[in-house]
Image (cartoon, rainbow, N blue to C red; front, side):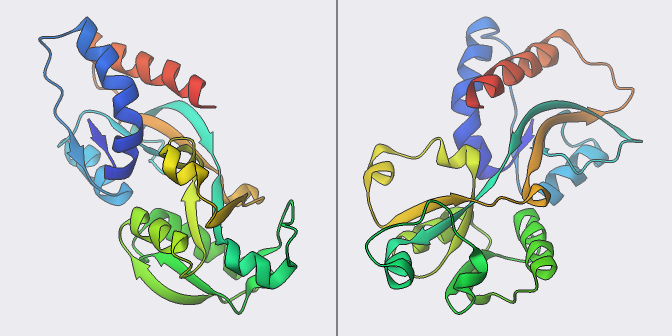
Length: 212
């Protein structure tokens, strides 16, 4: 099974215990990496199945939809106070923050590619303070007031109680359909799926319904 490090942290604890309880003698081998690496693993046969955003070739790949996932702005509350005073807005227009620092993923990252297209479309060149290949680093730096970050919806649903309750940042959905991704399970077209893989897929589908 191929999955990203961060998504694996969120998703696998809800899926693997169910699978292991039913099939305790079946070994599940994980290959972790970013979306592009996972797609290459699947194409080269290094993994049987991948959980990732749906950017797979329809000619080569079968996909099972799991959920639609939005991205969120993670904005330091100090920035909001500078802009709006004591009363937080219910929604924000990111263009109003054109002169504030942003903390982004590196250009090789899928979310970064989505956001680059988004900013190009709205005619805004964000002031990028720092780039990282770890989305948790960008998230933590936003919590320290260093800049505005982007974070996937699934990860927000699984924040620790400490992060949920702290008041250093606020979260706003990016209300643009082009930034919404479909999370899927993908496997090579025409390949036989054994009963263990089918069960894992079914568990993932059922768990995804609980996440939405």
